[in-house]
Length: 233
Length: 233
Image (cartoon, rainbow over all chains, first blue to last red; front, side, top):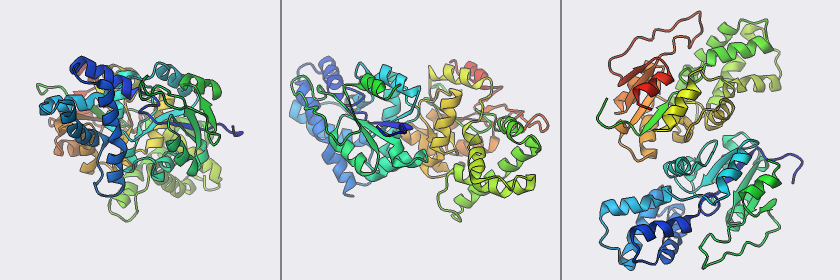
């Protein structure tokens, strides 16, 4: 750690704070028990990076994640025998991303961190999605920062440096906290400090994720409660 | 009221939720008791609309309120015999806008409203300012919306319509709550519902503000607690 602690902790959300895989599997089991929820969740999420890449490349104009999720959903539904879903059913299912459940340690860990630091998401999710999610799950953010604020998707430097600029801070006064090494590496390249959060179950119990430490990160935490321990919160 | 209640309540902040005049007078009394705090607060605030007008007209590029407040401050300090203030003292005084106290009814009223509605500021203040203010004062916003998100200052329609777009709502599903009739009129022109909040002491006890009802508003409330009554929260 540096002599000075960071002032702002910016959190990746999907996978780091909330359990997208488990939440989608649970919702599908309730709504459409005939389909393979695990495969469906993975297929939906697999479309995420390619869809954002189309925005980053300029092929698509600025498009929010709600719309990108819907484009991917419309594409995969027929593969799972759900092609006949109505517009209303599709719209409802698409909003499952607003209803993701937090990991069990997230609310308590963030609440501890909030007492000492300014905490905000830095997510590619849109503002409305992140606000609905926080309200439902009780995520105690100090403010909602999103790709939508910066009109750029991570790993664009405009997002990481945007957090520093919003708070008039030097990049090293901001720490990105995420369960994804590529996100953290991009933040580090911008001068932010980084904390890796282990989420071995991000892709479900059938697809355990490697959570080995990466020496480039400032901190390596088992979960957000452990991060609060490490940051003295 | 319409048959359907609004989904989102967007609040003007300076004067509506927080008492800028009283907070600045109190801070000046502590720091620089030799000057006329009432006149100083009014002079500082009087520079606000002209400074934003320079951004709106394009004379200045996008400039945040923190910077505009500082430009006005540098201009008025010599008039009050404070020309010798150092850069650090100026920077500290300028941040008084991050430390404004809420009106006595604000935190309790917003907390009631939050249980039933999504609540957010819609302020010309920048994101960092509004976040610091909320954290210090305990304002329980669901998210922070600001001119900085929309890169436009109220009364630009991009701000009012921007709130509706963020939440995928029709304009009439958003209610602007403000102590300023011009702000409310601009929101109404964009199709939002409007609630006027009486703040007769906005400019201090020596300059009582007219708080007469304007029939164009959807609601007229004595304070935010009364607004919660009117909205069944």
